[in-house]
Image 1: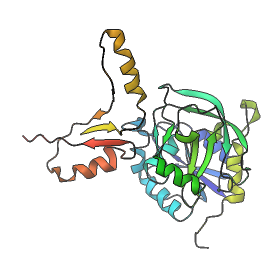
Image 2 (image 1 turned 90 degrees about the horizontal axis):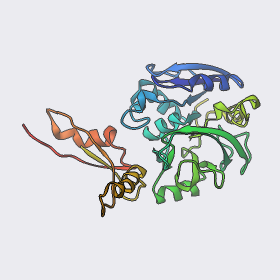
Image 3 (image 1 turned 135 degrees about the vertical axis):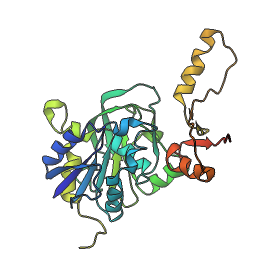
Length: 226
Length: 71
């Protein structure tokens, strides 16, 4: 199992993501200018401020050459995890539903929050139980996930809300307390909290490691030939 | 291009500005909404809609309006 971590100009969490992946599998960085994924089995789109967050977070990064390869990989059922800015990029690219708006409190947030796993069984939540609480930090300015009512109802019905902030712990005003969602196939998951910053009890929590460890159990490429 | 937050989407920036106005003596101002203005020059204006939809605006959360000024 080899996991690729995309690096855009302005990424800043790719090294932590790489280290988190390395705890469970082989891992490598994928520069945004390349047009292939070097044959990796899973892809992480990490956090940061790709392209300076100009225009809207993720709006420019989605046109990076590597994103075409990520979209093709996702369409074949390849597991993709978007964290924070990576979540914003995947939403802008149309690989995940909704959009991320400025936090309702207009402040940059950096704090530990509890999130609840609503959808175990994706390649990134295979090791989690439904209703399990994970303690994972958030650090973002634009983390208020939004989708219209009809979309939220559809996502609820299809089990595509993967994580919610625990009751009373919604830091950014996101619709329906959503912290993370997945694609129709479940293989593309995005969330605002940073599991790669919660992989060692020394820094407060190792709960985030579950997402990366999940890929070993649930990382089979759904729908891919062979 | 004028790009605005869609109706019904919380605009905390607009709300904050709205709350600040009475302190300066500007009473009776409501529904402050803050968007973005993009100015650009093009030789062919036929693709401006597409340009807005694909990049300048995120139509899930923003509406856009194109105003053309010809030289």
